[in-house]
Picture 1 (spheres, rainbow, N blue to C red):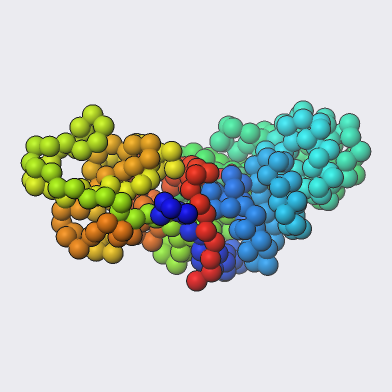
Picture 2: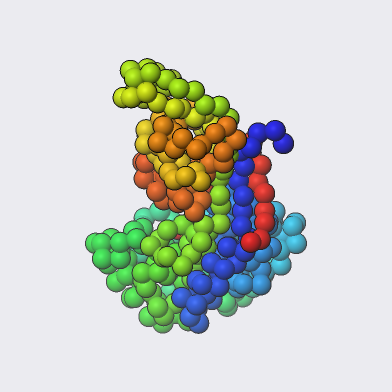
Length: 351
Ligand SMILES: Cc1ncc(COP(=O)(O)O)c(C=O)c1O
């Protein structure tokens, strides 16, 4: 491997996070959300590492679940979007998956097939208005499932604004949730922010993704699992008034030392990163200087004279953390994690 740009995945940090979150979840069951290749961390490797620490996994689509089954993952796997066709449903039966159903087409496919699922999750729309049965149709859906022999159901809903538990939309969702779950045995509302903000203490399952990977969600005990790193490939000195990179966005206000790092938007480093986006080094943070190119970025290292060609840099990881970088790119850490491209080698280790 010639280029030093890589993603390293700390599987011990992942399982430490799982243990910390399990404590927070108390007696609720723990579903690890490993959709989108475990938020860019490698679904097979993460599910394998987590298998003794969690009760089940969740993915978005059947294909993701089938890949986990092919890799030997035996725990229950919930497919959050449920089947997209009758064939999709059959594939889910064969792989012993748990479908989450959220509309009448899916219910019809279930009725028409002889599918015997161990459990079916019913998604209820409490106010996000993206997927789910309306609260007043949930009882009928449950009866229909019982009539075709599916007795174990879990009622789930998803919070639209879990980071803000006092917001109007969350309050409205919580009220709808309290009503619809009144006579329900198995329920699941909380994602990471919902768990850490105590959105629903009396549910059966929590469904955790971002926090598991060490995304901030204001929890200090969690560790970042992914480190996106590289090394300085080239350094040059420029005069005041000279510019760096495409369209000359960054203009030197003083004599400046500019480092070029071999990573760009084709690797998943966001093109939207503004000048000043922090980049970690052994001598402190250095600011991004100039537009992100396809294969390179540039940083102002004038204040870190110890940095040289070959010095390691951290694009995100412990410092700067992913949420810090995301704030400079008008996005969220979730998007950054899931947009690392195939070109970047992924290395797994346990600290
Ligand atoms: C339905 C559902 N549940 C749970 C999660 C996990 O959320 P988080 O990563 O914030 O924990 C997601 C993620 O998007 C989701 O779509």
